[in-house]
Length: 98
Image (tube, rainbow, N blue to C red; front, side, top):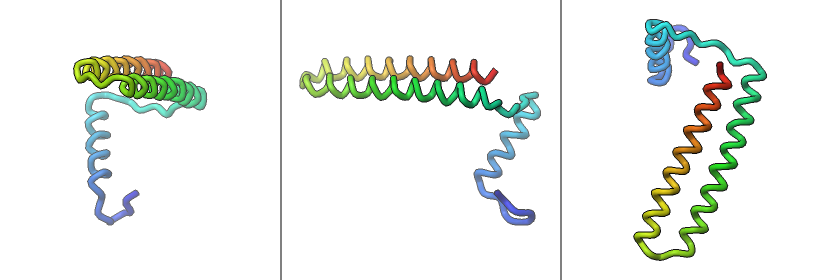
């Protein structure tokens, strides 16, 4: 990104600090294999579809009700479902990385 002698962007400076912090903590970044990349892409695709389906179902449920209490309950349920699916996806991605 930055050329020798050229000023560094805030992004480059932040990434440099994070790399130094990781080195100090003993964190080693290993490049992903092609199989790991494919597995992660498959996981993201699958869970992206699940999130899209949950979003569509949520929108359909909201269209048929006008009661504020019911709508609020639907919002809470939707947020909980998104958090669950996202956490599950993140866990599977982390497992695929190792």
